[in-house]
Length: 284
Ligand code: SAM
Image (tube, rainbow, N blue to C red):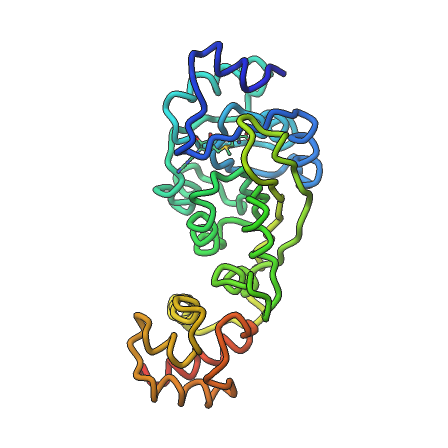
């Protein structure tokens, strides 16, 4: 396989930092990721940010179909040529900004009835946004195998009480199971990023263990609680877009059996659910 550096030079291109372009330069690492992802010949994969095809090629060799999204118009011809060179005929390259991509509409338009598998070596600056997007699209996405900057990956698997525990951790715990598949050293990329990466598998549950009545409101409560994470929950909630008074925030917390001076990072998912149910009562 031609190295990213050589490939880009041949096409007279340079990696674009603002698009998070750190290309995987080690084919055996790409193959390891695909192996650990345990893909099957029945899978339909959407790859986010296909770049020069490092993951698209080994993925295409295993699954039924790959839709390779790439926002950088300069890479599209190169990517199509690379796929053709490697005889990958089941991958379609689509010039697309993932942040404007609607998984559900796409599946409907393509007549895809099975839930999709998402693969990505995600650009770091859009990782959180894409995760929220996947959580909201999970009825059409069964699982996602994603490479993250190590710090973010650690946040996503953090336990309550840990200062890495975040809004995204709670959202993901609510509706998925997450496991770490591997660590990839920074030296495996061109250009070399500052930090190592970790690959996580996020397996979305068909149904959450404890479904909430109004998921959108639940996510707003989580967002409000973590919006000012250094503050006590009572103050964080009353200062958030939920617009509850400090007194009602305290009452809701107490009714949910949560001490109002605790902080968001200490709450378990069932506690967030109980709090949401209490806040929903005063909203009515
Ligand atoms: N998958 C390739 C690999 O592993 O070598 C490339 C990974 S590189 C970290 C991220 C890729 O995502 C780049 O090709 C970049 O152009 C693309 N990208 C950046 N922002 C994007 C967006 N909003 N939508 C789709 N692709 C994006």
